[in-house]
Length: 298
Image (cartoon, rainbow, N blue to C red; front, side, top):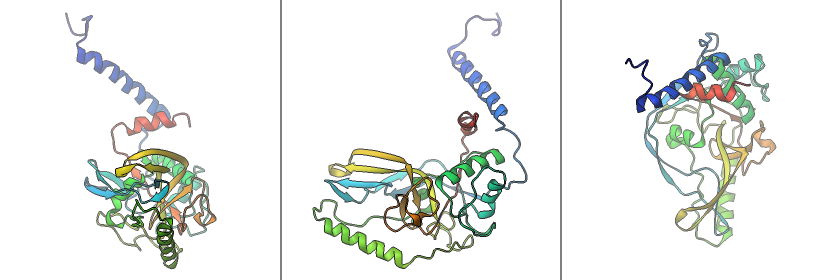
């Protein structure tokens, strides 16, 4: 009897058949949603760089406490085993304005010229997310904001270490208050809020341009409050996902709707000069299917 007429399927075939049917169904949804249309030639694909796998030391974002006192986040060793495809430069005013012109993004708040040489600022997390969705649909790729860890991975030595260096077992809060005051005073003394041309702040060792200049960058990382036990082990943690980490010279937790960080919005300490963003491109084989399921109804 031929394989087609056999009433019995091998174990591998019984697994593969449902998977193929699911892929076919997902592919049909993708075509209906327009995800697999050819990329439009009038929207240039932003320049990206590939960050190769490497290990790095990193302090996770968030507010950390031990024995009731604020402490520095513990350093962790991170081993990234996959490449990261990330925009070399921040999204520019002209690139963002193209999204505005098509009615997919709200207009920028800052009145800087529409240029391919100036970073878009006055951008909220919500605005940046809308741009990522629009760019994904217009370029036949999947773009998202990076996580705070993604930026640390890509920025290398330019990524900030926000530690104050106070003994985490100290019971004297005045030591931390003094260290925090000195840090904030130093940050205020070096501020220059005017957005600069692309490349003005140089590149890190992996090729990422302008990180830690005067434009902080939105991430997908939610602000966290973490309580540490002895040995730096996490005892408890809670997330606030209406507040996201903006990374630059230092980290700032900001409400998702904030465009001007100097207006407040849950920023802790010295606010960023400006907020803008860059995106990462998801090159995994299933990213378009996930994108389709998530946005088919929108």
